[in-house]
Figure 1 (cartoon, rainbow, N blue to C red):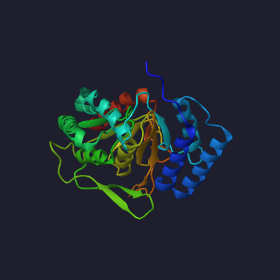
Figure 2: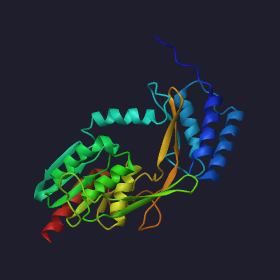
Figure 3: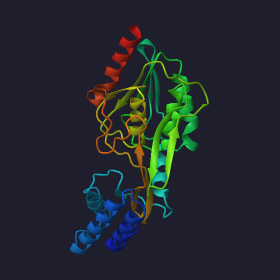
Figure 4: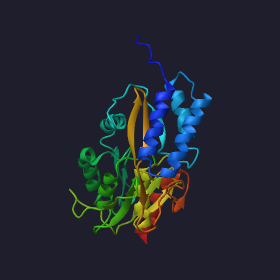
Length: 301
């Protein structure tokens, strides 16, 4: 049995502080956090032998100033690639292969209402376009649609736009990302054309949420809600609106640092810290029944 690699906290903390200073979307907070990490290191707060414990301690400190849930030192039980972004991408690929490409459930409910579950993530579009198109095209003939995001942990903003494109009739401005340094912004729009058939922009649409719904999944719910296109049913979401990048700092440790922030064109803000607030609040476990009842009543009316 290979002994675990000895953990040296100082190089991890030094690199984490450097990444904050160079990449975090909020430079003033980056400076505060870099100082906090170095101070805690000097005090001996990170003198631990276990990488998972170091990840827990550092993440708590990283999130102590502004509560940014995307800002983390993440522990990976298996060794990960040193290539930038590879740790997260490799984990996503394993989830993709075991979830039918991120659309594990398509079902026709009573009354002509379709259910499409998108989980556990909105995977990169170069992987997910085909399975998502198949699922959404299959549901396009339904009289009403329920999109289940209760177990969705986030993913790719481009995939958010792709899904929205099936649920709208016209090309629509969905979101704007402002990147680190404030010198560059990037708008996200629904697509003028999609493979397969659209559900469209007029039939009843409901989105299920939970306190586990996070990041890009929150954007999907928020964009559709702000456009007045969907009714969100369930629980407030986790509240993470900052796209991030990942760097491997140790064979079992990955730093994730937000490099941008989202601004919705309708609300001029986002869901960071507050989560997406449902239109119909109920326990996540009951949200499917609530949304199905709402859809049936709408169709009957």
